[in-house]
Length: 266
Image 1 (cartoon, helix red, strand yellow):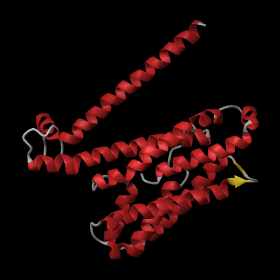
Image 2 (cartoon, rainbow, N blue to C red):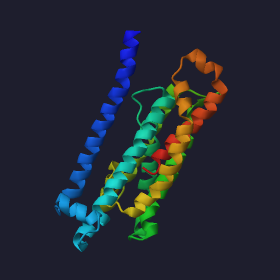
Image 3 (cartoon, rainbow, N blue to C red):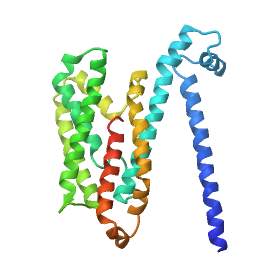
Image 4 (cartoon, helix red, strand yellow):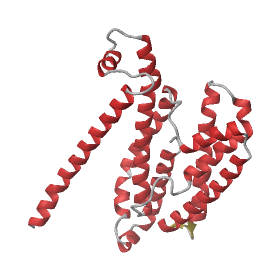
């Protein structure tokens, strides 16, 4: 009883320590990102700019057009990857699973590289269509990847977590091979752009990209929260899961699609 009591009091304390450490790290990253760069700014300059005290056009440009969009977009991407990773680990019952293990990233990357290989010259520029064309192709490629993974992972109408992981790894390898083949057929300029896209970058982030993620940030966490109890049930033993097999399969699919949808805008 004493051990159980000490463990129950220790867990919330440890959780709050993790929250506090994460908050300190977040504030430090926020400070470094706002004040350091090609155009250094002091904390006083940042505060005056944010509070609109003696506005300076140069400071406004650096803070509101360059640095803040990158910071906010980075936070949203990390938030999305964290939630998607937790859902993927719950669905696959594998604590080492990560959001990219199911091959969704590889499908999105293949679609973007294919778009750049075929249409990049026709959509050069900085307009809305040119900027959003690649993300939309990435979303389409991710959806195709999800459909392929679920098609090959199902066996007699059932979806086994281990089979899902193996199919995801195989699918990612196949999409990755096709992506590499197309990349080698590109001209050097497009290849460099494709490599930066596949590696991930927030260098060109602006408020339009932030706004494009807001619907996902608002809707999907609510859906996942409403299905969070299903992730707990998935961690039970085989006997308990069999008693809820039919409902569990349906809700597991819902959680998987929600996690996949989280990954697509990222």
